[in-house]
Image (cartoon, rainbow, N blue to C red; front, side, top):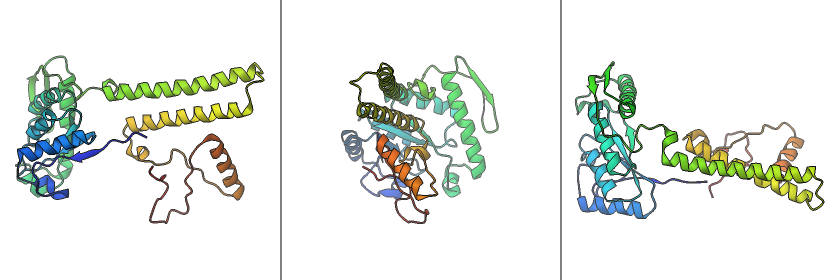
Length: 292
C-alpha cells in the first residue's frame, strides 16, 4: 500500500509541536537545512503553517519550493487576509515557481481571538461560508477563458482577468499528473486480472488437460489480489480517509460457528486477509489490520 509522509516546516530551531505554528523567529539557514532534510529524507509534503505573528507563509512556501526538488509545500491560507483575486494571482505564480508542487490548505480559522488580530470579526459559521465562496472564486478565476465578475455574500469585483494559469491548482483532479499516473496503474492491474480470468476460462472451455485445478485456483487468487490492489489505489486516489487508512473493505457478520468456518476457508483460498473482531469494546486495534 503506497504511503505518503507529511511534515511541517519550521522557520527556526525553537518550539516544536503545536507551538510551532505561532513561532515568530526566522532563521534562514535553519529553514533551508530543514527543507532540504525533508526533501532528502523522502517526505512527500510539508505544511507551511499560518499564524498572525509568524513569518509570511507565502514567502516561506516559495523559499521551500526554491530550495527543494520534490517535496510539495502545503500552504496554509486564511481567506480573510487576502482578497481572492489577489490570492488567485499569487497562488498561480507560486505554483509555477514550484513546478506544480504547490498544495493550498484553506484555513477558515478556529480561534476568534487569533482572527481578531488581523481584523476578521466574522463568527465561525460565517468564516466557513466565506471559505466556500473563496474557493469557488479561485477555481473560477483559474479555469475561466476571460474576465470574471462576482457579486457574492462576502466578495464583490468586476471583470478581473489574469494570465498566470497555475500548473495544477484549480484543475480537475483527473488532469493532474498524480491522478493520471495512478489511474494508469489501476488500469494495468485490472487488465492483468481480466486476462488471467479469461485465459483460465478459455483453457477450461477447451478442456486443456495440462490446466490443473491448482493452476485455476492460483490464477483466481492472483486476479483477486490485482483487483483488490486496484480498489485500494482508487480509494486512496479519491482521498476518502474513512476507507484509505487500513479500514476493512468488507465486513462479515456471522451468527454460527459454521459461518466462521466457511468465511475463513474462502478467505484463505482467495488470499484475503481477515481480522477477527469482537464486540467492539476493546481499547486497542479495533477492526483495522496491523501495520506492516
